[in-house]
Image (cartoon, rainbow, N blue to C red):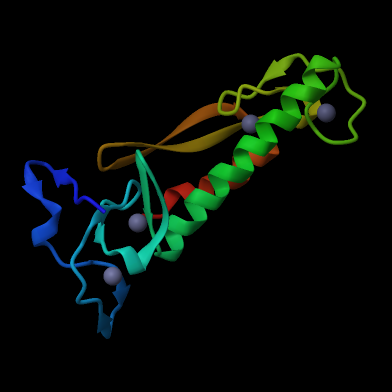
Length: 145
Ligand SMILES: [Zn+2]
Ligand SMILES: [Zn+2]
Ligand SMILES: [Zn+2]
Ligand SMILES: [Zn+2]
């Protein structure tokens, strides 16, 4: 595995930053996590691809898993919307309202205006957004660092 250059510094000179509080990993870092920006070794990799690298921390694993689930969800909603119905499984309602996060379409009962946390830099704000139940649940995973 070729180590990547991060911010001009070579990742090869760094130690892995993933591991337990009392069991610091002593391996050389070979990757940088796309979610938490920690450097990590091959042994602490959860997912690696050409342009992606996810470390084995629980918070990062959950983000990756959530993203895969989300892709499946979006395909499911798009399929239902093509048939002219709300994106919620089993709902007979007509769609007409767009979720501002997944862009799926839902009936008025399955889309709610909520105060959704948004992060700009270091500050956390809340913005009113129309979101489906699925997107509303996801915020817990993505609010963690
Ligand atoms: Zn990570
Ligand atoms: Zn490691
Ligand atoms: Zn949504
Ligand atoms: Zn519905």
